Image (cartoon, rainbow, N blue to C red; front, side, top):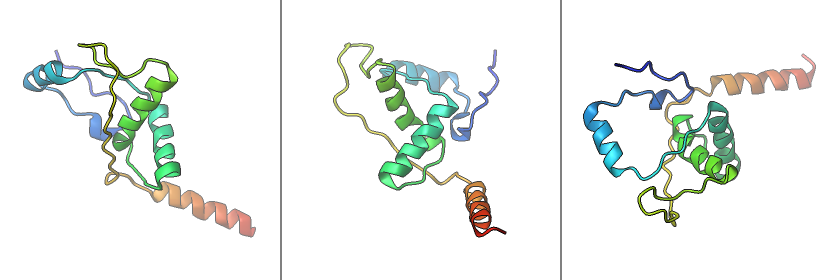
Length: 116
């Protein structure tokens, strides 16, 4: 049975996982936190506000996961040992982001401010 790809703004995370990948994932991954598209957008904004970096939705998923875990009081800990993670690394990327919508909105806002 194949699952339909999820509907999400994170097109970089829509890949299908085969049996080999699933087995490796199941063996090596300690914890999983799920996030919504709204969580992703909030994370993108936080990364921009705090780091002045523009990241694509898939690139903000790790930040979203840490924020959701903190918000929900879940904590980030190993399923195997129960110990909280001391260090968390998050890879940020932004190469797959179309900023034309944002820039069009900024241009529209400027035109409205000028009274045009």
